[in-house]
Image (tube, rainbow, N blue to C red; front, side, top):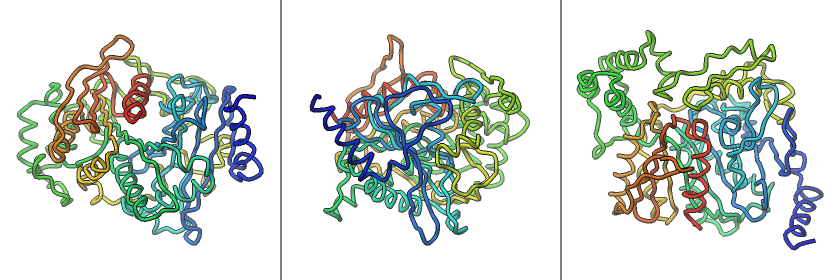
Length: 463
């Protein structure tokens, strides 16, 4: 037996057997292919008195889990399930076309890292509380719960306590990830019993300066000819927003005249008659959402809608799979035993997230993290109409100027002999990458490019 095999056997004995009560969280999912790595899921009690618990899904790296880092994935919303999100691009599986079984994801991030997915905040996915006031929450409480989660999770999985750690996420995780990373860095300074070995962050299509991100939507629509430049300038006038150099954390509601002109522009951009329908289409400006019927999946039929190489029905199939009773039982999920239809985003849990927190400027937090010499990689889909890359790139340039990072690279990047997008490097620690042909959810729309970014510009950044 080789040294690596010996230590893995010892690990399996100690932490997967007699001493590791997380053995009870080991799972096999209905319809999954045969695999050589292990997966675990269950609850971490955050506040037993309040009955507040966060749900997690942990996947070992395909090979050498003892030698590879630990990566946390958080999904935005706020209110979307990180666990369900793992099945649409970066986790080890995605569903078959009829959603009754699973198939291997060839671009899974656990090829290069152990992966931990956490449903946060309370009310997203299968995370819940028995105290109703816990569902009236915001960034502070969410971050506090995540910090408690990590301390307890590492008690349960001590073999990973000192591993290189990466924190990644998408969309509103542009708040979750930096706040958590900053807390872990400060936690390291305050305690000597536990130290988190934070090596890097990755943010996909992140919400960083909400008000400017919203205005950037209409700038994008005007640049693509989806609305007129006259309509865009009318929005600028009516909404009277701060600019990149004068961003405020104040969260005044849009004026009625501002909302009216934005709503009209949104419906014009997507050629629909309702704002609700237009809002569903913002996440991909060139492809329509899936039109598959849930009734077909119930009947065992397939639903797919491949547009421009992207199957737009993957999230619909994942929602169906997670709603199956045998799947929930195998996951040790749905601790509330509620019978409502499962939805990866914004299910009927009663979550009421702070609107004021959404307006908070995240650049000061990112600046603090960079000053701790932790690399940050930000990537955006070029077809994202919800958090457009044109706005995010301006935020990144502003951040670089605040910390006196000079532009060291501005070039096209390639993947599999094709243009992948644009790469901007500021100093040694800050990277921005656009992804050609990707929508708001880069791992869903361009999974191969997403894995490339993670492997070469996130994990590879700190090598």
